[in-house]
Image (cartoon, rainbow, N blue to C red; front, side, top):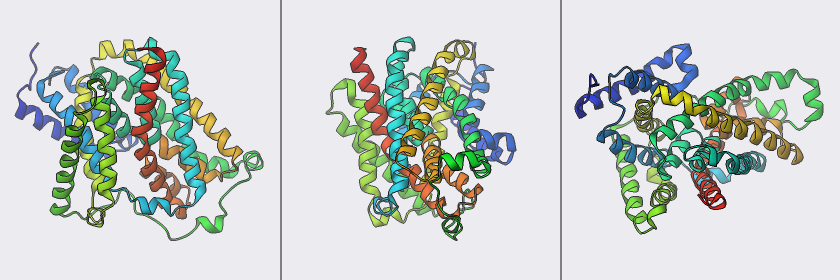
Length: 386
């Protein structure tokens, strides 16, 4: 059956309109809770399953090959390593334990689930990525491991099905903890109220002033880093080229981000998100609902075990190390979602002095997520001989 739109210009118009609509719909409470990423995926699913756009075309392959690497490069251009070194040890320990917990649980669970799921070892690496640095890492690792569009779509869906209720609980956790004498007795380590109520506040999701020069340089650097990494990855063995490409993009982008001229550029996170949403629209198109519901249950169960198992391990280790519970909670949110979401939790809990730290924790998680995710995936593959 033919689709309503099939030409390249028409499909580009549809994709960009979807992304614009996803941002606009964030004014609506329902879509704000879903976030722009899931909104774009849902719109894509509707359009492809109602035969408005095709499930696959050559254009989609081109977008998938370039969008996520460029998006990752642009987002990482905001990393300031000197700034990361200035924060106290406890938040760093919390995010480090979060990364370890997710990697350890995903590896063990992956040994069981990988043989039962198509591209299961890749799914394990993708889950490590998303629960150390957010959805952008999931898709970056998927690109590096050359996962199929169906696997990427199923993993993204499982992430939202399991991850969203977890985030809702974590947003409510500060109020629950504050009223619970039992928890305070069990976990007596806390940042004093006098240190929480400061003017160290960052405006979140507010209006931003951009220059066309910022956008031009961010795109130029993003594509240049992607091109250089793609060239260098060509010297790697064929089976590892895509993984090496993503790791090189991450590494080179971090190095470039340390130059003062680059640090002055504004809007890297917003622009990176925009490019990532273009990729996610393609993921939505690839979802055939009939096949999707038949293959997602096992992946969702895998995701549930990774989330719950890593959460239990993280809490156990941070309690052992006597980490203050505010840092523990924000480290978990920064890993499961991202820095801005962790900052929202801090702001809603009126932990004003921790808002900036929350953003930094998300940056750290996103930075290391690509490395540990790909490492875990190949470790499972090696152990199982897949």
